[in-house]
Length: 129
Image (cartoon, rainbow, N blue to C red):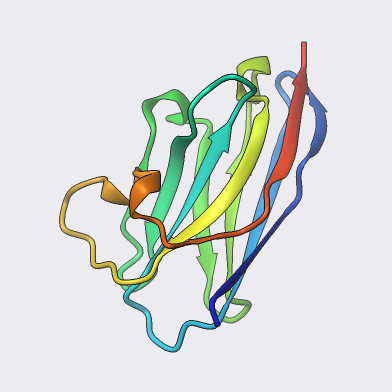
């Protein structure tokens, strides 16, 4: 059974940093993708960053370019979202999710929430001004 466990949210001042972790279990192969999504109150869920586990290709939203990075630790089965230079508009509940059958094909479809079959619980990130 595939399970995702997100952690690392909290309260931080604008300009600060946080690192979110997504512990992944249940996959017996590497052809899947992990994405980070966020949802602010009253807003639609937004794809932030995603990574193809098989080849490490990543995709990101323009809103986080140059501030966020994603990484994968295969030994720990954990995907990290490093968030720097945080802004109040980054405030949201952050979710990690998995697309169970995925190979990077040059498109950013792993940023599309509708393609994700497994979801972890959210972790709240609050950025104060």
